[in-house]
Image (cartoon, rainbow over all chains, first blue to last red; front, side, top):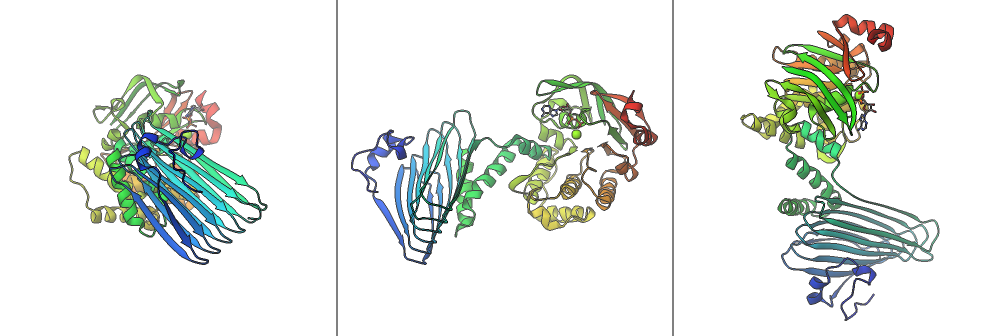
Length: 245
Length: 247
Ligand SMILES: Nc1ncnc2c1ncn2[C@@H]1O[C@H](COP(=O)(O)OP(=O)(O)O)[C@@H](O)[C@H]1O
Ligand SMILES: [Mg+2]
């Protein structure tokens, strides 16, 4: 998919919740292409933690039997948009774990399109987002199963946590299936921290802020499990979370 | 230690406790028995300060403080421990991680020095051994994947680590096999049998009381204590049922 020279509008599906004002000076965004040869295995971690607005467009091509592990920490102090389009060859595996944090009045978003172009490929997406203040977290994710991509196994586990009544989470996992014998699962939930768990922790003596912090750390960590640099990513996520609370 | 007077409480605006009074002195073990839905767990939650369990009338004094005016974590620091009928699973948060922070938050609130990592682990190991719970289980996320019996033993380990003044144990015996029942009973005695401590056991059955001998047995029905007696009352209940005894 080529990037158009003109700035998108909210009518463009992938940009319906985008912060277009912040995006304008970054447009058009250069596409970063990542190509994995047949059987190749690669891992990439992206930590988007700066103070300026960021928009990235990744295009990933996975050859037959290739495996790509992508972990994303999307927690800048301004607009942060990461778009990933992945096309999977026969038996390829694509794993995406993404943690997103938005406070203040920020918009932080992840847009994915995973195309199963050949049989027996596996895609896993785990996205954990936290929005506080008047922040907004978005996930727009489409899994497209092309004709002939039989035996596809795709999953999207999308959860968002709202810390304040003024925070927003938009989550839109989508499936488009044109093949047979396809196993696709998606779960999507926007919620608040489990009050039963918070009470349990408080009953043992944890002050409410600490209980909340522990539960949010655990929540965000779910997205970073298995990253090559898991510990570093988690530390940075916890620091970003800390700054937000 | 604990003085409950004319306590009225609602759950989600529904009246459940309707004038409950109960006094527990240091060194005593009390048992509350009663039919399902009588309000036993509600009493525990109201004492613990669970949101949406609201005291609407009456008073609760705990070690000289107005218990109902405190936040849940402050009640814990004051020395109240609630053993849950259904311990909550918390993915991603390990027992050792949260218990060390809990223990130290309590100690800080009481003006005591925090436990070092080593001191805490030694204490945790000691209490886990007492309850015959594998120490490795405490490194796992809170209650996740634990069997019913393991959850109850883990509750008792937590009680041992935190060292409360008053333990309110809500159906600690349910879901336990005979061996686990004995282990929990002995654990309760080891941790809580002391002149300056007290226990309120909430239970359906006589069997836990064989191990943890109560000084007083109360029958809770319709949101109030309808009868109080000695250990023999539990046997009478076991034999004749609540209806006959509470009538
Ligand atoms: N969260 C809740 N929302 C509404 N009603 C509740 C809730 N928890 C308990 N109740 C009601 O309160 C009453 C007492 O419940 P509970 O205290 O759990 O009884 P027990 O522990 O004695 O079996 C029951 O009628 C129950 O249906
Ligand atoms: Mg109950």
